[in-house]
Amino acid sequence: MLRTPHRVLAALVATVLTVSGCSLPVFAPGGGSGATRPDGVGPGGPGPANLAWRNCADIPQDLFGQKAPRMRYECAEITVPKDWNAAGNGATFELALMRVRSTQQKNRIGSLLINPGGPGGSGIDTAAYLSFGPQAQGLPSEVLERFDLIGFDPRGVSRSSPVKCISDTDLDASYGAEPDPETPADFEELVTLNKRIGTECGAKYGAELQLFSTEQAARDIDAIRSAVGDEKLTYLGYSYGTLLGATYAQLFPQNIRAMVLDGAVDPQQGMVAGSESQAKGFERAFDNFAAWCRSTPAQCPIGPDARATLTGLLDKARATPLTGSGGRKATAGWIFYAAVAALYTELYWPELGKALGALRDGDPDDMFALADTYTSRTDRGTYDNQADALLAVNCADSDETVTAEQVRALQLDWEKKYPLFGAPLALGMLGCAFWPGARDPYPTGPAQGAPTIVVVGTVGDPATPYEQTAVLANMLGTGQVLTWEGEGHTAYPNTSCITRAVDGYLIDLTAPARDLRCPAG
Image (cartoon, rainbow, N blue to C red; front, side, top):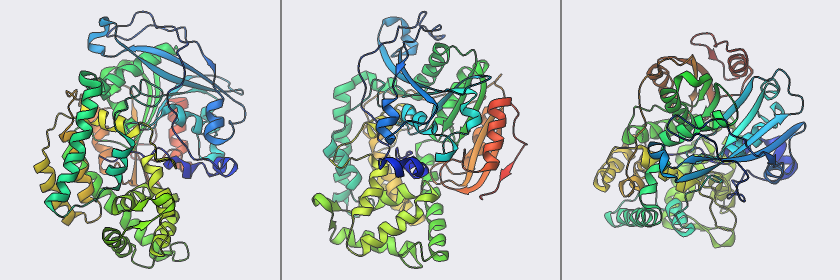
């Protein structure tokens, strides 16, 4: 399953990045914990914690070259059981939190907890980004002045007891691999790679791999709610964050004040159905990109048939890959991930057209830059732990067993149905086919007793296709659909219509008009 690229938000923070010249990296874990362990840890969640908040304005400074005006940044850690089903055994994880508070805060409502998706995305980095306000496509001023913004790195992610077991060499091999291997021998190379990754991760973490599941992380959220002193949770989850929020809503419906789930994941679909849904969504998004290229040739220098151009470049790369800066080979795999990255947001479409045009002319470096926004690869050839966390969480969550033989059959079938994205999405299931950890699937059912939950969907969303929006809302029972008729992955706060609807709900608990559809412009 594809994930939210950790630096796709860079396109949305152009004001900040123009000043700083930086992208949006995810940090390695910080120093030691200064937090006091919460009292009363148990299956029902910890009691209020005496969190040792400390200044951490260095995080936005390092990410963006500056911190947002009139914002204070403080960080802390809380301790949670590794296994909420055996909380008394003393084994714990440390979770990293950031609190962003406006110096102009008034009529404070409480905390707004953020999850950016992934799985594997850093909520701390995202909170820092969103704190820059509407001038940088962050959260609206009205929201920032009424809430403490709480970002957290979920268990296994970035600063929170990170899972890291895939080598940089294997990640390079995985992303650069042929996205649609033709021969059995080429397919077996991918099988061998995924077997090795599974074996090494199992050797390092053993039975703990099961503990990175979404249900365990959802129970962590209730610990965070209590630790920051909120009687009720106010939550904003994007992409995979909608699955995490939906799981919380089923476990703790009585503890919700307001919940916005943007870029809905259907929890009831299995791994195969979810992967095929994404293949269909990315094909549709690429068709929309191709139509944009035809209508705006001055901004898209690859000609009127973007699909033919990309297909031709993939074929050329298979025969003779170009060499980029530092000797890096522009294989078909890297070209594929450049296209994936650009389809997450319409703002990247000109970058994709430019990169493919340069690749056609013999220069692959722009293509590599796009691909690296998805893979989190640095110029030094190193990676953070997002890929590791993605695999650990997705495999722990799924009780659907898919064999290598089934993956091969789906690859050959989907390459006909979805010519660009079908085969790679099928091959993406190989990781869990050889994953050694036990499974811990999340619940799928109504959030009985929860208040209205706003479920936001984007008509042109490739990663969480729009069709899943109503499915999630209906499953929860209290879900209410809010539609953005735009392109890209997630909607809030992209337009004034969406922003007004979500802000009114978060601040005043006034649900949007039923079945409200916001125009693309």
